[in-house]
Structures are given as C-alpha cells and as structure tokens.
Length: 385
Ligand SMILES: [Zn+2]
Image 1 (spheres, rainbow, N blue to C red):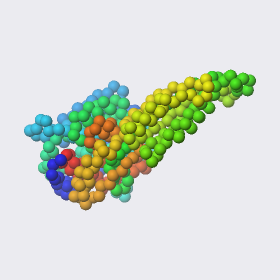
Image 2 (image 1 turned 30 degrees about the vertical axis):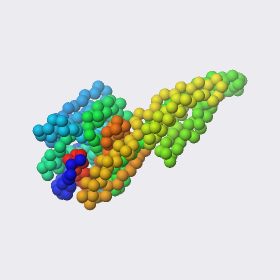
Image 3 (image 1 turned 30 degrees about the horizontal axis):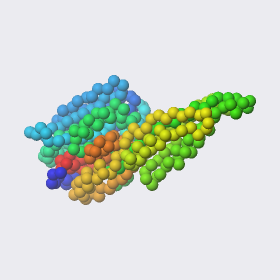
Image 4 (image 1 turned 60 degrees about the vertical axis):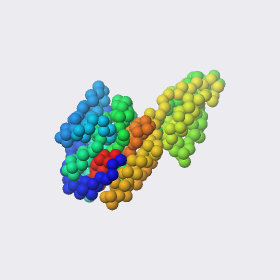
C-alpha cells in the first residue's frame, strides 16, 4: 500500500458532481437489464461501455451467446507494464422483469433515488465511474492497472462469468466489489456465506393406498424423514443453515407415491463446513426399506471468509476516517461474485457500492448524498493499494 490518498480533495470534488452522478444513475436505471433478457442487458452494457471509453479506458465487450455480454474496461498506468492489477467487480443485470419501470419508475424523493436495480447495483457502477473521474480531477495517477469487470448474470448464479471473474482475480492484487453496502451507515461486507442448492430425489414403489398399501414404498414419507434428518444439521451459531425450500411428490391421494423430491438451500460461513456438509448430503442413505435416494447439486459459491477482506477493510476504514466517516463492517448470509475471488485467496472487499435498502423489492432505493463519499473511498483504495 502507498502512503496517502487525498481523501478530502476527492470528496470535495465529487460532492460538486452529485447531480451528474444522479443523472447518470437515472440513465442506467432507465435501461432495464433483466438477467434473462439478453437484448436488455446488452444495450445497458453498451451504455456502460461508452461511459468507460469516455474516461479513457480500453474496453472489450465479451460476447455471450445466450446471456448478456460482459464488459471489461482497463486503465493502464502510464509508463508501467507490470505494475499489478486492481479488479473492480460488479454486475449489469437486475432481478426485475422487463417493463417493471412502468410501475416502478426512476424517481427522486427526499434525497433518495428509486427504481429497479438502483441499489443492486447500478449506483455501484456510477460510483466506480466517478471514482475514475475523481482521480483525473485531483491528478492522482494510480500505480496499478485498474480493470472494471461488469458481468451480465450475477443474479442467476454467474454461470457464464465465473471463469472470467476467476481469471481476472488471479491476475489481481485486490478485488473491490461494488455490491450494495449494508445498513444506513453503509457497512462494507467482510464476510459472506457460501451458498448452494442440493436436491434429494426419493424413489419408492407405487401401490393402491386402500387395496394393497403394504406393497408400496411411500416416497413422500421417505423425503419427509430425510428433511427431518438434514434439518438437524443446522448450526446457526457456526453459520451453517440447511433449509428445505421446495418439495414435490405424489400423483393423487389414493396412490402410494412413487417419487418425491426436496430442494434444499445450504449455507456455510467456513469452507471446511461447506465441504463437510456436502459430504454429509452425499452420504445420505434411505430410511424406509425399499426406497432409493439420489443426491444432486452442491455449493455454487464458496464462502467469503473474513481473512480475505481484513487487510483491505483496515485500509478502507483508515481512508474513510480521513473524510470523517466511520466505516463499519458486516457479515451477511447472501453470496456475491466476491465469494469466487476470495476463495482463490485474492484479497477482496465487498459492499463498497451504494448506501440504501430494499434490494430486489418495489421500494429499492439509494441515498443520493452518500454517492460522492463512496466514490471517494473507491478512488482512495485504487490509488493506495
Ligand atoms: Zn448484486
């Protein structure tokens, strides 16, 4: 880490840009970008790519066949070739269907901006772009290459972007994730649980429920017993949760059901617990005689453990204090793409984006006057890491 960043000059300059930040945010929110709508994500991506180019980045559009394109933008420090890299990570997609704007338009009220994806995470992209502007305005040249990676499918599990994120992370000295902050004071996220989905399918034997039930093997009973068993694996105090989220089974009431299934949400705070939990699921055996079990799935995001973010958090807290801001930290149950980068051992700080609340809900909003402060923090980090 370098010595100092001019935090107050960053902040003062960015505060004069608050209206411009809000205007750009409005443009971003008005370009709807549902994860499954390739055309929508692509046209929003093109707007973001143009904003990066305007700021002197070398931009590549990483074309995808089915999902939206990913955008990679790079700023090289003048005169240096092997200076290292800082990855600024976020996503273009939102959870809102196309047309949501009609009942949930972009609007400003009492210092808050509302709209689909405003908090998760279009304001985060605005913050990152204005951090680049602040560097130029205050004439600070970062020592490292800065790479922005805006992906198209974070809200649906990052199927087409995970490899790309991991490759970029491996080339980076640090990863800054512009996902929303937590709470009204804007805590960054220093730990996230690993998240997975495991399906258990039970196969029994069908029979008439009245004539010869003794010949049947009730798959619903089997699944019910398995749910009771896996539910006993919950250890909230250790950060382990196991929650049956979906059950299906049977055909009609007078038939002993032949098949049933449950899909389980699993989360763990530690990588070792994640692996142990996966092993326990794989080791499940039928309880009813004659029943069979199949187990599918597993964790799709490893946990982001605090050890991956502690040093960056310390640096961020110091930079924030120079602006008179107390930067808190939080650990959360939801995963993000920061989970992938932290699991590779690359220092990762998440939740650097907007302050607000109501992600994925009709009341989603951000606090406008906090945007300059968050952008100053990102500028400070990329110039001192
Ligand atoms: Zn997000």
